[in-house]
Length: 277
Image 1: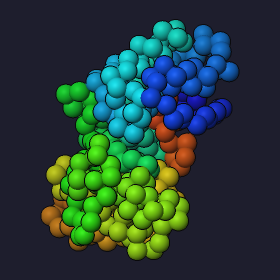
Image 2: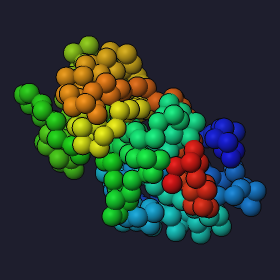
Image 3: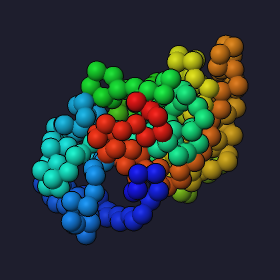
Image 4: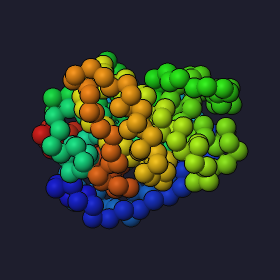
């Protein structure tokens, strides 16, 4: 990325199915290798799913079982020799959207990822919320109202009835037996309704009026998903300060996680991308 949030080059590799923390880190090394020499860069930013300790010193992603208390920031810093910033990937997405995306004009908003998992980042008055250990905004842990069977019994690492256990890509595949890309209309609408319910609760709690949502599931489901989510928000957001709260697709598209990681890296140098502290 350049310092204005523009993507210059991107590379991807599949996450290996492994229980070895070192094998997984080796894939990260392989991914970064072609970008040498690292001296040409100011910083390296990393967006990683949580939970984690502050600054990504130890990461334990729920959906990447190979890393438990893995010292990600220190290992990347040692290997690259760069200033390294690590944060939750959904918090990074929130930074991207406030920097160059759909939340540029908002001082308070929720950034959210609905993909294989569900996470979020909250910006209040141009300040990204961290919490005591850096995990603030994890909207996937909110409990939602779900009629009938919960798939959480097949996802033991998730809280039964939580948004992530009910509306994430992994949960949809467990419940329906099909990947989210093959979801029927009713499944899409139900996922949107549950996401809208959770977002409305955040809007009512924190006095914010905008949620921007990225992730392969949300963006793949498209307009029917967002319409169902907005209808549920309209039903629940009844107090004056949250009435009219909106949920919109993220403006950065599939580049959002990378732009967010760049923002995390710049913040590690003391800068404030988009004016967000």
